[in-house]
Amino acid sequence: MPRRRRKRRREIKRVPRSEAFLPEFDRGAVPEGLVTRRQLRDMGLSPGGNDGPVAILRCKWCSYRPQWSCNHPTRGFLLRVDLAVPKRVPTLAQEWALDRAMAARQTCGGCGRRFFCLSKKLGCCIECFDGTPVDPSSYLAPAALAAHRLAA
Image 1 (tube, one colour):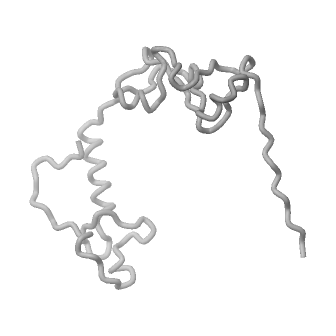
Image 2 (tube, one colour; image 1 turned 180 degrees about the vertical axis):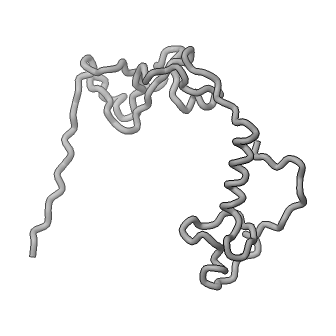
Image 3 (cartoon, one colour; image 1 turned 60 degrees about the vertical axis):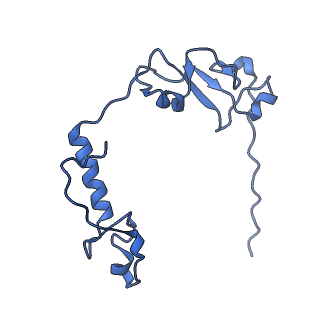
């Protein structure tokens, strides 16, 4: 019987904060004009002209270790707001394509009924797959034709 392998403990690379590649800021101490990607998205902007992060937003755990650089996956990358550009607005053709894709995802290939969302793995409703009766609340009744049915 083979011996069990011991898991090796991952070595923590500690880099002094002075030798870090990018400047680091604790939460609540970020200067004006630097935001995360999520904050850009909430402002209706995309990173656009930013070539990469300008600074690092330290994680909550690293705020207790000010002498070490933060290298945890929960850290955030800060981008400049002045280089951000407005989000692109989809064209009507793109919205129409998205609506067709969602309609295809909701329509059963076997019986043609529309459901809220079908399993990608099965490709059809459960009733067509193995005969299990379907909950009537998951079925979408055909709606009257509307002039404009786009997503946005």
